Image 1 (tube, rainbow, N blue to C red):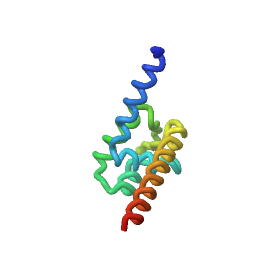
Image 2 (image 1 turned 90 degrees about the horizontal axis):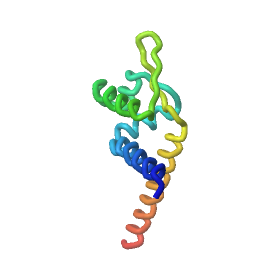
Image 3 (image 1 turned 45 degrees about the vertical axis):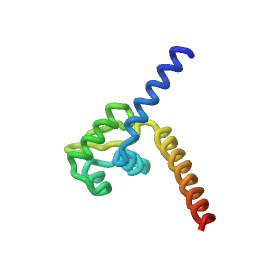
Image 4 (image 1 turned 120 degrees about the horizontal axis):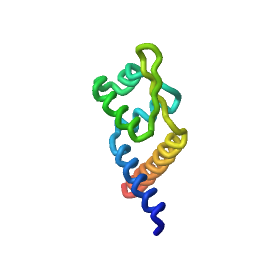
Length: 109
């Protein structure tokens, strides 16, 4: 395998590790409609500000999110719309799997 392909797979695995946390996925979902402040994300997620900030830092450090400062507020947004497409595609796959499992369960009754 080419070295460039190996590197891409390594990077992909690293990025996928970020998505192993449901709250981070919720943050991405909340930001798909546009940028939000930490305060807005705290209200949406219902978790402490320190936790939201920690997740935002991880997502930003991996290039998933970008931020901008306006006065005292920092606004976070998705750095590349393809991230949203990838998350939506995975949600569709999982939704289909759940439906298939429910159908299988119902046919066994």
